[in-house]
Length: 113
Image (cartoon, rainbow, N blue to C red; front, side, top):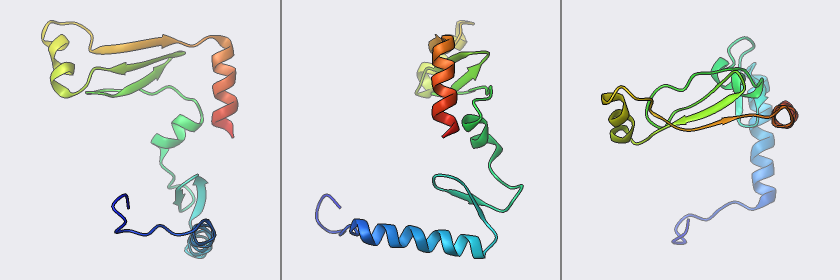
């Protein structure tokens, strides 16, 4: 696209394509449950829905993120940086933040939209 070899559709064409996808997915029995995801009822990605519901989730592995009991964290990455502290019996967590009550309210509002 940057080299001019791939022309992008106009905004009107994008809107038409999106409407077509919505129509075809509905006819196929798929419900729109995220900005870009559709699924048969009962088959939505539980992993993704945990984010939107602001539920706890663990992040295991290099570069993974987690959210447990009001604390967000991210692990070291790439893999070499993740393994280094583990070899020393240390935590691979690079960053951790405890959310304030106001942060929680703001996230609930944003994720609920």
